[in-house]
Length: 576
Image 1 (spheres, one colour):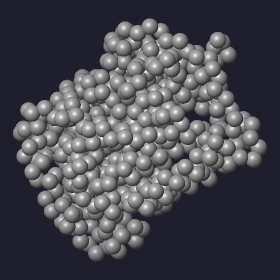
Image 2: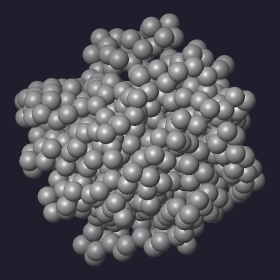
Image 3: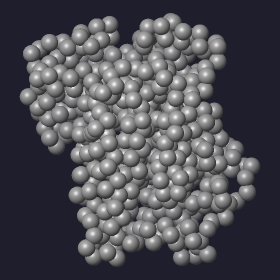
Image 4: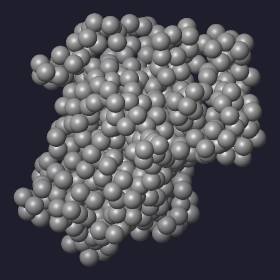
């Protein structure tokens, strides 16, 4: 049946080679599974390398009072109690062990004087909790996981885009995709699939995310019948570069604030005193992003529409040692010496708390055999993620997804692939070449980004969201009429057609969920519903595909067991 396609078969297929995908691969290999890892770009170029601040884990190396209970409470409080409590518990309990494992596998960390892993302060964390390597932690993590995985022996398929998950009845059977370089199709057979494809930031015009982040994994899972959840919660990182235009959105790590950086407006005022006098610059990301946005909107922004972030009051050697990447980034890209002058920063679309809905213990989606981990999965972070929790999330749930995927593969028979489904997937990809006068994908992408930036951004209103939903609906028609010139050999316009399909799906999911949630909570801020509404405090927005329609429903959050409830009781009373 499939002689015409290059075919690869594995027990466990992992889509995405960032921290979550690699950690899943290592765990599945340890269980004796045959593992294939697909990455859209090159191995080692995952978004994990952009995570600069550190890995949040309650190791208590610096603050001895820290423990998993406090980490759990901080995560729940940051997520405004919308988190999947079981995921938050597992994460807080297991992240220290995962960091120690990374260290055993050769990861280098900054050290305390007595040789333990050094931990730094970060927004929303009660104690100094972020294990780090200067401001290059994610890079070190990827290096370590990659070396380990390659040494253990997984197969890597680089520069390969998956366009469809294939099914056998109601379970996953494999994936269909193409090689980006030559455009040839490739088929993967698998008993278990782990989606670890990261986020959705390329649907916005100002983002810290690079070209790969088009929501592929969420759209693949949704199309195959899995649920999405919490899609309205899109985190805008408070500090991205705002000048010069060519670098707009590039991340300025929260570690700058963790190491003592101060935010000021055009008038020199330390404005966080107004918004969170207790935590100031180390408030949670949603609060700091809205504060900068508000200062700019009220006319106190910097020349290029941001705020000043200043660490020049610290000794120059200290800054260069603690923040080497930031020092070079500003010197080379903006001609600014951060040891002498402030950085100009503003909010940038950074991370999505929503994603594929999964079970806490196994990371399995609502579709048998399909797992998700890392940014592509929902639940752990609730309404707002704390900095540093993403890297420990990758390790904790990457491992759990790999373990459960390997166990699932052991207990299931080899699925059958459906020839019609494969032909349909091929036809969908080839159609744009056959049209002569269709739409240009680049124009549509820039229109979508503008709509999402302007109407589904940091502050939202019913009117804006409804208008965005209408426009997204209108974009879908032309997106089915793309025409492409040239061949399938490394054709970026063709790649974009496919990416836009995913971006339109996730954009619609975000917008529908944002319309439904008539309150402000965490990263979701409604100008027309500025307060937290207790009615919405115990339900998640869940999205499913029904025929060709997106269906939204609310489901209650599972109730928290009494022992964990007791940990949170003192917090709930504060209105946090």
